[in-house]
Length: 92
Image 1 (cartoon, one colour):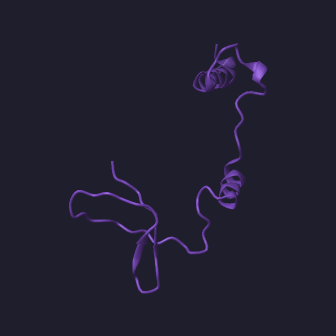
Image 2: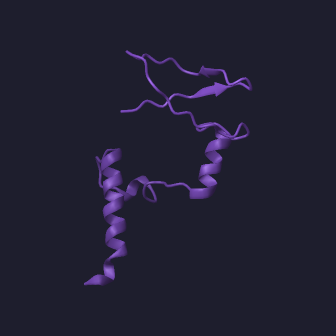
Image 3: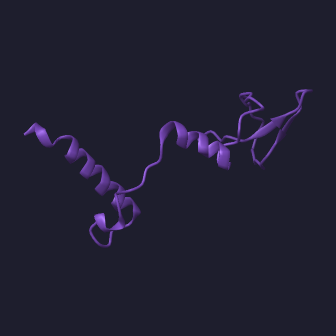
């Protein structure tokens, strides 16, 4: 798997990694220059932008929608199955 490391590049082109990395041999890298005005992912404002574009998802209408004892992944499966069934009700 290729690691992704966040870095800052100053106006002189000097690169400063923002997190530690351990490599075992000389390696190459591809650098993508991001707009300096762009918000960092995971920051409240950056997350708000994603929610504005794509909305949010809440599993089910309420916890009572699920059979008792389901964990988070089972609730996702339950929601997917319910949605699929609802979308295909008239195909019989």
